[in-house]
Image (cartoon, rainbow over all chains, first blue to last red; front, side, top):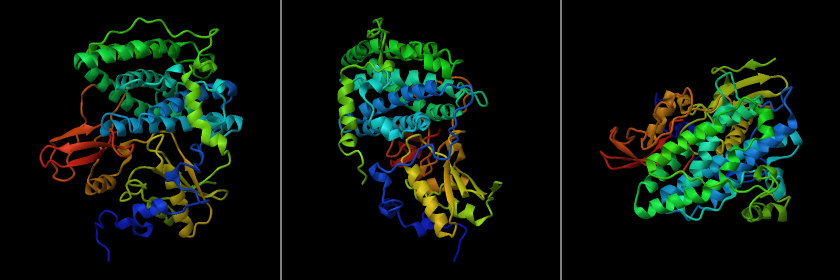
Length: 306
Length: 169
């Protein structure tokens, strides 16, 4: 018997229901729901390095952008079960998931060139080999710091990714894989920025207490923004035409802060150590604790699967 | 030699019928995740899929399901490849997919934002969605995120029911 409209679910009778699908063993005994046995997220993508592009610079640039997302995602994951409302739980968990996805693609791009998997890069590098900016590793003390840091991070990253993606047929980088990863990230980051901006306005323009806490969060985080705009030789080698990230960041931040009634701080950037910052593997004290938590299971059981 | 496998061939139909693991009433063809099905003597059937979100955990499940379904249908050599560019958009969800979403109680997305130039900042504008239960356009956004990466939460002002919607992207 067939009808024109079989109704939802009818098409999938041979595959059972959603729960059977989850429990079904697919290949090699791995189950996706449990976070192991992932295949290469770039499976089937042409990952050859274009002629004229410095592979070392491309690896370092992808690691930098991948580490920003990996470490920031971990910091956001630490908030889950501690947020004020269920809606913010799902928001922060989803943002962390998007960033983890961006990290996987970028680490896979870098790892494919140097012959390492994304897991090897995430779990078996030492602190000084991580290239994330120090803003990514900051521990938010309260919800105001969470949303202000997310506004700063997503505004900066969106401005950068928009330029790396470029326009159709005119990517902002000579590496088509990186341009595609950036283009994919733009929509996600735009959504993160809107979420963060909405909260910063609500809190900054809210009660006297919420205003005070949001201004304090901005003052605390501002020294970490200087590092975002330091000249980066790897970025210059891979995306020489990308300019205007800092001006785009300022325009958005000024709009949000004006709407929220918050003052843009004038604090000096957090000091470098012999001119070295997060991009050079020099991190704050917080980074060691993050890596201990992120890497301990993989390092204790390096060959484990389940 | 690479020969495109058209919508009328059995391999395309088998791959296209793969259900989405998170919304199993929809297929990967309905959602625009399936980009192409080709045949090459070297690789056999080559199924190209595209991720919805960078972190979508369903991609690997989908690849395994496509492989298993084609194997069961008698296609022995199957390769599942990823395509990142152009990035997936909710505009690729088919009219049939939109109908099935609404039937499953999930509001289909409105048209994805068209951009030329910088992505504009959005302050305080709630995306609208039509209630999938009573059809009323009088609804409000209750949360920008929901249980999966692709959805948001809404409530209908007319019938009072909460519902999920697919974010326009």
